[in-house]
Image 1: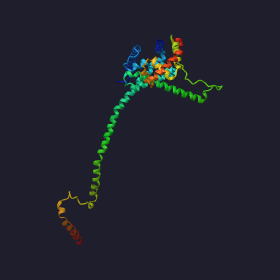
Image 2: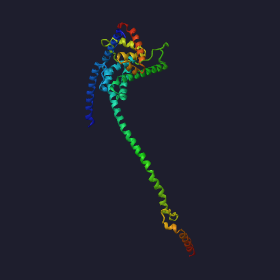
Image 3: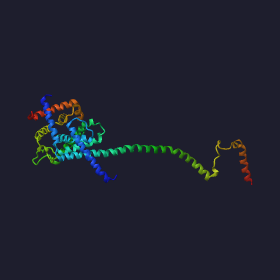
Image 4: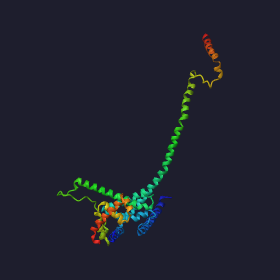
Length: 210
Length: 130
């Protein structure tokens, strides 16, 4: 078969696969805990929530996209042979580690900027920690319900790392305690403790919700 | 966990799900592209991995066959190398030929050894007298 003939068929095949994956992802989204039949469909059902989760941790669109892309690549490369039931905790585990890596790298970058004299202004006052600029569009300012999510996101971002992880995985993603413990790499007791503290903090922050 | 906590969790989850669906088209497109890239990269990686899985045993077999050949070969070479100088000596220097071994020589030679030694001694004397 000539390559010139192969390409349109391949692209058509990919397009059909992609559409069917998105269609399946929508069905999966309706039934939150259904097991996907293909890795494509699984990732299609996770990618948007994964992006939001990464954004909540990193507070930056580009970094969140990087983290999600890397997590997808690693899952497909190393774990595609695993049973579909294991993909969810594996994917969140990979994404969590990637987020932690990016946060560490950001901290190092902030220290280097400080060493290079960027940590103080002209009066000698300390500048806030360096954060990458986020030039992406902010959908929270565009659509209905955005303010409530923005309030919640702001409160979640204030939580300590482990409490934030426990809240997102357990409450927002709906993983059970065992799965959350597996993703976080800690005991189930620790998950319960982190979650209880997170809930207490968020109830205080989001008093208006009551 | 009381009902207000349940309500709180339910609302938080609903907002999160809504926000996930509200992602702008540009970001959604980049996420789709990232997914496609991940799946394509993995398939390329998979085929090279499969190739390596086939080639590795074949290569190992070839190396083992070569090693077996190298172990088998020296035995005939060694016998050849031992016989070769003897043959060369026969061809180049007939006077330095050693008497044949007892198992190869004519048994009559050893039975009449005294006669042959007398013949050799007298024969050389007769030659010198002439």
